[in-house]
Image (tube, rainbow over all chains, first blue to last red; front, top):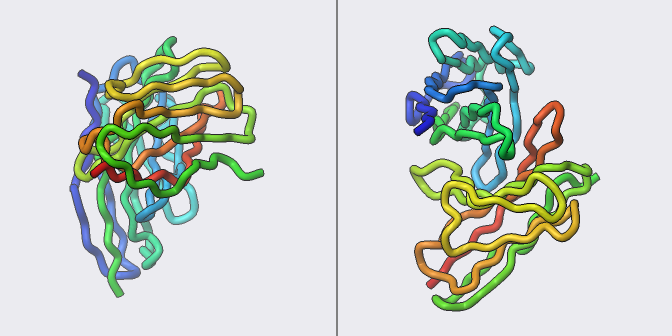
Length: 114
Length: 112
C-alpha cells in the first residue's frame, strides 16, 4: 500500500522562529508532490506543487524541497507568524490512468505562539 | 468565480436517514472528488469522477453513492446514515493541467 508519512505529528514554535516539516513517501510511480495548508474548519489550500524533476519551490515564506531519490520532502517556514498556525498536509500523486490518484499524509499540526 | 462550493455546511441526521451533499465548481474542471476527514486519519477518498457521467470508487466507498450528471456538480448520497459516517466531508475539483486541486469549505455531518 502506498504511504505518505509526516513528522512531527504536532509542533509548537514561537512567533518569528523558523521550522521545518518532514514528509517521507513510498508512492510509486511518483508524479508530483504537493503541500497543503489547512486552517481549522476550512478546506486545504495548496502551497506548492513539485514534479519529480524539481528540487525546491518557494511560495512567500514557505519553501518546499524534494529529494526523489530518497523519497523525502520538507516544508520550511521562515519567520513564522500567528496565521501560520494550521495543519500542513503532504500529498503525493500517482501517475495513474484511473483518475490521478492522490495519497494524503495525516498532516502536521503547527501552533505558532506569541 | 466562486471556486468550489458545498451545500449544506452543517447537518445532523438520525441513524437510517438519507441525505445528499452537493458540490459545485465553476472552473470547468474535469476531475471531482469526495473525501472524508476524521481526527487522526487524514483525508480519505470516498468516490471520484474523471468526467461528466463517470464515477469511480475510492478508498472508503461503502455506504455512499455519487452521481455526476453535469460537469460542474458532484453529488454524494448517504442512503441510510450510520454513526460511523459522522465526519467532515470535503469536495475537491482538479483540472488536467497543472493538476492543481481546489477544495471546498467542507460539510460537517453528525449522525446520532
